[in-house]
Image (cartoon, rainbow, N blue to C red; front, side, top):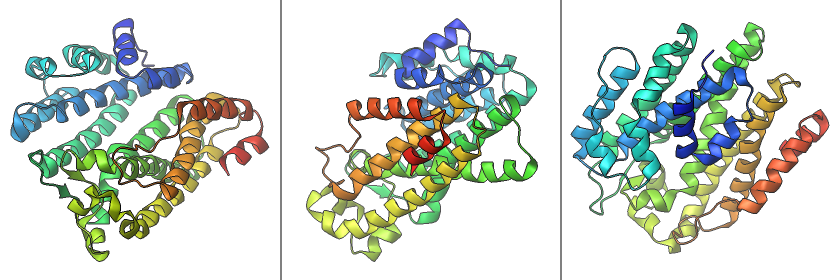
Length: 331
């Protein structure tokens, strides 16, 4: 069983305090593996988002890092230049301490190693595509995904694959199901991850546009007479609203699968069910806000208030023992 040692535990706490608190509520049998993948993926994400060196340099570092993580190389890249330009000290510390998560991965059981490496490889593939599509657009130009197929593929790579990973780790260490239900859980897990990523894409449109990225497909924008540049003008919200609502409906459909996923987790797995319920309820609430607010207004970032999130967490904790209360909260 993979367990986070004090060095990696400190890296994780420094990198994401909110995720760290969630992780500590998970069963010990899966906590280490999930925490380790998070660290490894945050390292690759920090590499890809670093403001230094240009596309080819970052792609080279990202690929060299993944080669080491996959066990195909024995050398960790030198991240000194990247570490020095990080605005977030925790991300600099993560790059400087990359040997910690990679070392823990090397020491993991063969079954955990295989599952973690597979998911990381898919995530890094998505980050490489991001760099290839969007790098160099900091000069005011905006590049966008071309069609829904590209958007769906991106959502799978960076989030749907994590749903698969989470499920496989849980089925290997926390509980078991028959082959039919395993297949159903895997399908729902992918859509669970895609739901959360699609919500992030819709919520973060202005922020992404500011760095030259548009994850709303150009094909769909052209059908309603808009271009990525038009999304910079909050006055175009009425024209954008029909397409926005279409994507909200797709996210809602994915969230329905997430609810089915939670209902397939054995009732007695309170911690796992709770950890899955919280992002679903927050996601449902976020979609309600997206339906009514002007998502193109960059001065008004749409998110569920912290006070309401605390209320949601309390409600989830209280509802977990009861099937009726859990289902009511998710409906």
